[in-house]
Length: 331
Image (cartoon, rainbow, N blue to C red; front, side, top):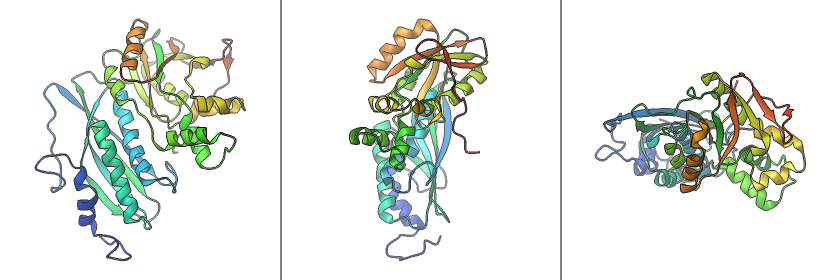
């Protein structure tokens, strides 16, 4: 492995791994000292795997703090596990560092992972690290577990089910615009809040586990509310009617929306929310609210699933509004 530059400033590959990532390993007696990790799931549990990657200039801005980049990488994966009702256990990490990445930046990245590992209760099980020709790219595979047969899929929803979301929608998409200087008409406090939502997602991991046996279908909101809803409806062969007034918005986003109705497009398709969109039978309404309150998660019922396999957004007067269903896509 050739790092280039001052050999005293940058350790070799194995010294770098020892310095940055050995402290994150959680397998007693093995750590990162072998070519592979071994994990034996508990009896009566299924393993759940998910994988996401983020690239500099595509999923995070070059000037974003290293610890927030690491936390975003981990949390976008934890968001998938949460939507499946899974408990996080460990992860595999791939780092392709750009040529100008400093050791200090790498250390801050590892520190961000360490902080979130403690917060969410999982550990690093292995991975790889290289020097990239071009922007930095990071990929993470998260492993969780659920009681056997209890993973929440996209395909179990039924006509008449309520449609719910956690958190607030649209903040991250507007936060990206604020971070890029594309939307300056916002109070400084609101601007800081929105940028923080773009940089560091808040996946409702604890609440996701409570959805087992309650949610009929679920997925994480990563590519936009309507685009991801279309995925759920397609898998379950249902349609949906959304009440726009019920879609949860933060105070900061609402203040911006007051200046232009155009900001609804960020609610419908902005993406990067990393909340849970789920369906559940109406008889579970009270229980869902109680469970969300117990883990301090905002939850909102925003519509109902229908037999007509289309998606309609209704305004405050109950009239259909024009809303593009397409969410974010790389291609």
